[in-house]
Image (cartoon, rainbow, N blue to C red; front, side, top):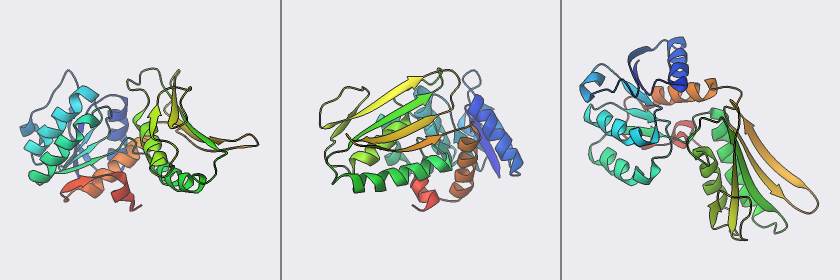
Length: 236
């Protein structure tokens, strides 16, 4: 398979290494100082996008112009998701987007939703989410933490919205953020009561897991049309 890498930073380099290990070829390596045109994608079977929030939608639309399926790992652009979804469906294009491509994190998403259903009836427990990332991560809270918060609130009736703050009202879910050193990503969902604490946790050891999930998703996306998530790929 021929893959275009859109965003050739640390994640882009990891994606290239994994893609090469799996027998794929890299067609272009685009970054901020080396933008691409739709025609540059003519030899690509799929694109994998890990750039910046302010560049993601433009990159996606250029892939649609080139009739090139795209896997998007950038977060911070989801306010324009309805527009992108409409474009993809109307133009019969393919996009798979996720706040996190780690297989382990997507298992965490699934467990988080199921756990919230169980805990909803136990009024003595108070849920909270904490995420830790490297100091260069731009968005706060992380897209992964937001996905966890949304999954929890869909199944936990006492929480109506999340706040990026430790101090919240009774109907609000506390989602706290920490930026330190070179941490790839840690996410913890906790239910605390006066007598005990229950938690589920995912701690990334490096970026390789994110890159592997993105490349596997790209392999799956080739030849499809529509708007997809990791749930579609993993069949959760």
